[in-house]
Length: 238
Image (cartoon, rainbow, N blue to C red; front, side, top):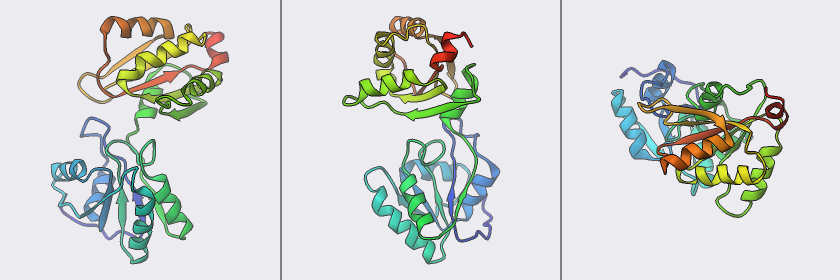
């Protein structure tokens, strides 16, 4: 993947694999091989990915949650200079529970072009494998660690549509306990872990049954996504 394309002056939003390194599109590889700058969460992770596909790393610009606001102006400045920039996260689609939206907002407010590429996303991958309704759904991201967590769980359980939640593996037991305490023990859920990797697993059960599985195992390893059935639909057995 050594040839370079003549890219337009734009910010390219480039999804990268969430686990399996083969889950990257030919278009994504061509863009990464051709842009002037790659803005990424961790230059080491992105550098390894690029080298895996024999892409000579261009200029790598670190963009993470602590510097995103300042980097937004930097990226807009690069585009004004006529550069092409790719934005990637460590895994999946940039700006989905990862840095990115401030950069996209700054670029669009400056009247500059944004080109989104389709690709890997943990929330959608878990959703379509869950067996729960997909015609309407909400993505709620990560629950707060402490303050606001009870309100988050209450809002989650009030949704009539299917909800997708990210949670750290060491806190998934706590989240299920909180859902049980809120009276949602029979709610249908699916816990997806290690998506696209060797030990990928989808646990489809009620909240109470899933909690029993988690307690029996003692711990859940790997990245997890929890898909939660909507209130009225779960009550109706849909």
